[in-house]
Amino acid sequence: MVSAYRKSKIGLIPKKEGQNAAMEECFYGEDEVAMVTSDQHQKKKRIKDLKSGDRVYTVNVHRNKMEEDVVMFIGHGDSERNVLFYTIETINNHTISVTRNHLIRVHDQSQSYVSAETLKLNDLIYEKNGVPVKIKSIKTSYKQGIYAPVTLSGHLMVNNGGLLASCYVEYKPLHVTHHLLHRILLPYRLWYSLTSKWLPRPQQQSQTESENKIHWLVLWLYYNRELVRLVYSMCTAITIYVAAEFIVQITYVLRVMVNKQIVT
Image (spheres, one colour):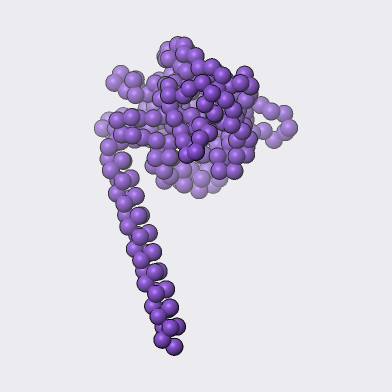
């Protein structure tokens, strides 16, 4: 099915009508991100103006510190579509607007990611430098312009407060999570990391040319989502089996060594 689509210069494919509902989960185009610059002056850029290869700041969720990241690709974008957004405001008066199934990292025992529609007042979400902060209000409204940038880390730090959001959305029929999507994209992330410094990237299209189009990888994952989930489950099972077998063999070797020492 993917082969029926004609790829453009940067791998973007025109949308079909049936895809619209599935592609309405993303960031608000007028929100901003902090760009990495060579000088000390902080530069902001609207999400709708982001391009593949742009260097942005994000939060390292393992170290709870701000660090550099890069936009790998723009999953899809549409400047004319009106979509229901959840605007989340913290007690520090910082805001972020995302669609209902967009994933936000919350501060709890499991450090989990939840969809915007399930967030509640006083829930703790993360600002820049990995600082948890309480939600003061959640408002819904229709806004125009939806965009889905995907970074190498799988996170994006949005607006002045640097509110941290996942680049991924929840797909409930397949129980898709942030961690699952990030692992599925591992081959592409590895390829991007290894080739970005040595191989020239195709020239990015202008915003007007790339409107109403979907990146080929997003489209392929969408149409092959059940196959991808099956392959991922098989790989996970094989990994668990190999790890278990390795532990068994190591245990056996250690037992043999201990028995030899007892005998001697």
